[in-house]
Image (cartoon, rainbow, N blue to C red; front, side, top):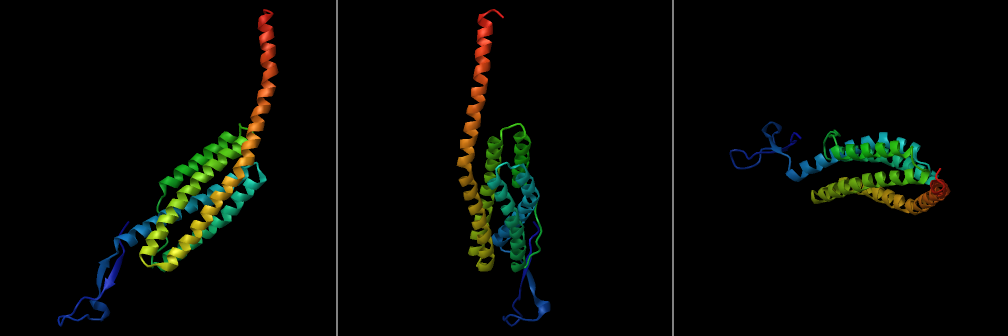
Length: 214
C-alpha cells in the first residue's frame, strides 16, 4: 500500500514554527495507522464478496430459520460496508478495497458445500452450510477485533466504535448459527437411521439369496 503523508510545519530560521501553508513538510503515515488502513481495506473487500455470496447460501438453505439467518445477515453486511466507508472518511482516507484472499477461499468453499448439498439429505446439507458460514464469521471476528484494537490505540474513538458495532453483529451471527445446529444434528441423525433401516432388508435378502445359491 502506498503510504499516505501527513503534514507538519518545519521550524523557521529563528527556531519557531512557520505557519505559512507553503512551508508545510509532508511526513509518512504512522506504521500503526497504515496497518489499520490495510486491515480495513481487506475487510471492505471481504464484505463485498459476502454481499454476493449470502443470497446463494440463503437460497440453498432448506431449514426456514437458517434461510432467515442468512437473509438477515445479508442486510447487516450491507450496513457493515457503509460503516467501513464511514470509518475511512473519519481517517481522511478513500474507501478502497484490497483483495482479500482469505475470504475468497472461504467463499469458494461455501460454493462447494452448496453444490455437494444437492446430493445430500436436507439436514446434512444445511449443517455443511452452517459450518462454512461459521468459518466466515470467525474470520471476520478476528479481523474486526484486530482493527478495533488498533483504532483504539491510535485514539480514533469514533472509528473504534464503528468497528465494534460490526464486531458485535458478527459475534451474534456466529452464536445464532451455533443455536441452529442442534436441531439439524438431530434431524441428520434421524435421516441416517432411516437410511440404515431401508438398507437392512435389502442386505438380508441378499444374504438369503447367496445362501440359496441364487
